[in-house]
Image (tube, rainbow, N blue to C red; front, top):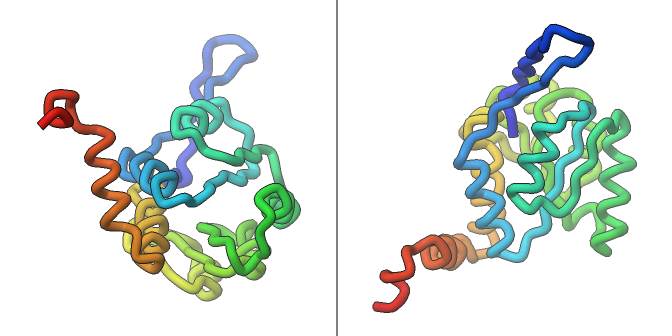
Length: 167
């Protein structure tokens, strides 16, 4: 969901503010995923209030921060959702993501992922991490399920002004 940049802003004391940027196209991806019945999650090694807030705003189902062993978190999510690994997709960009990518049914690497990660991905997104790669992955899945067009129509309908809905 990010380009990998981490901004650390000193406040003058012992507190440092961490900031990250997120792309609006990826935000829309989560709405499309929900419309298509997909459950989504984040597994990240870092702990960030910025990520927590973005995940809350996007109504992301599973948020795991501070996790170095992403595969264990992945299996925990599978258990909660009553899924098998081959029923899940995962988007990665660095070597810490490889264990999950090797165990999921559909592994995506973002366009700016490390070469080792791209080599093991089933699909490489057109867009870079933090620039719409999550949207690429969600649309890929929804297209494969033949539900993307309906999800887009649902999104447009849900976001249309009230006057448009009356017509």
